[in-house]
Length: 407
Picture 1 (cartoon, helix red, strand yellow):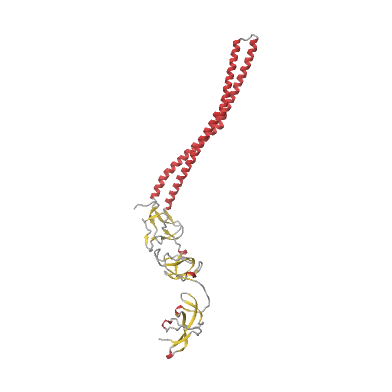
Picture 2 (cartoon, rainbow, N blue to C red; picture 1 turned 180 degrees about the vertical axis):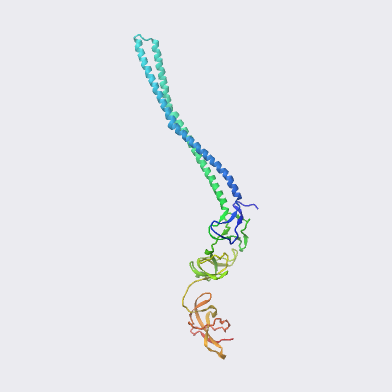
């Protein structure tokens, strides 16, 4: 079967119920495709890195070239041409003095006109050379030097822009490589804490398992595979009758009896109560109910997820009150009665009793508080179901009815 993008297979997984510690390998996913992508990405990463290194070297060379011309060659050329101009000026002054001397001597008849003419030609030549030297200095200072500096600066700016582009490209390739390497590492699932391995199987609307977690199964991205509940920090999801929801509140204490450990009652605390009824047997069920989340306060190592439990909530507490067993109370006509044993014997020596109307208060699973009707020390028949039922009392009557116990 072809795997879709973002999915892989379970290669190995610890059996459900295994106790693990932080760092233990719980599940191994198939990372072959991710490893192939990592190898291909490493080639692109190395190529992008070589481009960055080449751009860095090219940038360094051109920065040196610019500094060399700006701080070395250009000032040196300017100095050489200035010295050449000074030399030409000295030669021109010498030639001018020589012409002046020749004219003075020629007027005295000691020098020929041809010699004077030669000295004047030499002066003209030095003037031309001096003019050319000054032109060279002006061209270098105003045109050639600034032009070369601008060309080197423009080339350096272009190289810097190329380097920025290469750096951005390398950053993208590096990010892709790190992401792929992270995907490979994520294929090894380790326990973040201590707990018991519990598979997260996918169920349908009727609560049936559609895709169970096991070796060889394909899992998709972001799909939960297992949970690690801590036996010492378990939570109970209790279904609550709608008539009792209003009596529960967060922080309320309760007593928990685990069916698997009936002799080890636990204490719990309500953390949340659903405000809206939820389907009881899946999203397509018409039966809806309320649920309370309860944190187990004193859990122990042998607790396991999925165990059945009975929860008794402590709504209110009263001490030092009269109470009778729940089974000793009989309801007739919306009124509560108990059969109080009479010390005197009835007809034919049978023990007598009387039905006594009582007002009841708080109750638990075994006893109920008696607000009025009986006193401490009264003997109440524990199971009055075999007795003749009492008659509802009228307002203002004493609420007692005497009879003998039938066999």
